[in-house]
Length: 629
Image (cartoon, rainbow, N blue to C red; front, side, top):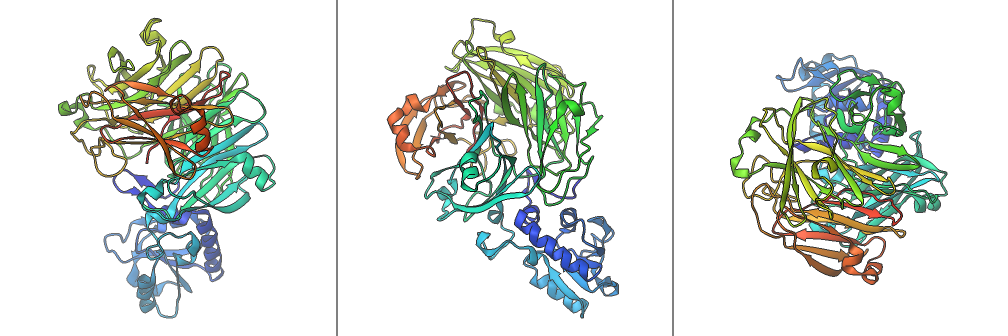
């Protein structure tokens, strides 16, 4: 496993990791390592605890030893070395000392005074070019590393289309631009360029076909690295990604941003059903190879991981056929990826009967333990809720599969609460005390019968401790939707939150900006493209009784960030609404918005949850949860 720290819920993201792992920083780091190795073994002074990730991402550095000034750290392992007292540095048989820090002038002065005659270098040699730095006075500021990866493909059969918005303008950013680097499947750079973000809160589209034509590229399947420069208020690059047929095929799906933090494990990967091929797209997020056997797949709960016995080069993409690694594991079993912190949230692709669908796995928390407090939250009503749409039942089947999402999670005590679009409680279904290795995939046809919720509605997974069990608040599930006529399938996954109550518990109800309680909504809805019609399902979940109706505005923006028009919407508490922008705004206004126009869903009275997608009018559709900012 890579010795790196990426993200935790208390501290947020580790900026040091991003500073070391950035593809351009990796080039500077490799040049620094080459210079140091030419002089012989190097002593590392590690004032800030960076030696571990530094050596994980620079494994070829010839290290004599690691030195620290904190007496409480002496004797601990830093980057595979026993930390020594800095006062013994003078005894090191080295010509160079590397100060493992950025903006390291003071630390370098300490070493120079302690060991005169040694050459002293720092990680400042691996800084990004000045033009890519937002806050030059503080290099390790989170906004300097607003980066992410995108699964990107244009292979003659399928294309990809990224849609986002310059939401940083709403936080005061004046001029935002992107540095972009496209890698092929072998990790080779296909193209590198910079592109201005639209002014104000304008929409932006990156289309694989257009990029392929612009740079005269061959067919490719790989990853696109994005770095937003000049941002403010938000250091995460969020996007929606459509995958669609370019050869008149029937495939269509969508996913959202990749979550820029590598994890030890990922979960929520479905095993293949009859007639299906499930491919996990493993994309190396670093400039060092992933060794053969460093990652593995396991049937969830089996604890018998099977190695992915292939080396994956730096920034390369590998298609892993799940059935080849786990030939005896079938739907509705679930698969866990032991990723060793080598990759950000991977995509998986399911192929059946000439149609493909793409979705993502989720971060399986290694730090999360059972939270006994969740069992006693009377002031928060039903507490943690995981809402998901029930699409109109005459056209679609809706299937839900709870997915363990913490390494410590051994059981899931769950029930299902079902609501009509008008917020009326329909029925309750107890799923039971599910073990970690359960194989439950609940088809709501079996719960609702044939005469209920013809126009759809929504359901919520809720903790239910009637038979005991534990909870951690990180409740996740996979949602699968199948068109009854065409057989086309779309699927998505997400986790639970506390919704719409003034009472708070730890960091819930979450807010898009600021501390809890989160009682407002800012959701992004992309528009349709190439004849495909955009839609979304908005849900008003409530842990406890809140306003009878939402006060929701749907604001249509043009590609330049100008507000074109607004429509008001009222959703009943515990209700839902299916929204089609073409019907709501009209075709003429949507044409004025342009391909990069979008809808911002705003509500200052409650927090809504939503799923978005497009429909091609021929039996194909996509669906994934929406993102906010």
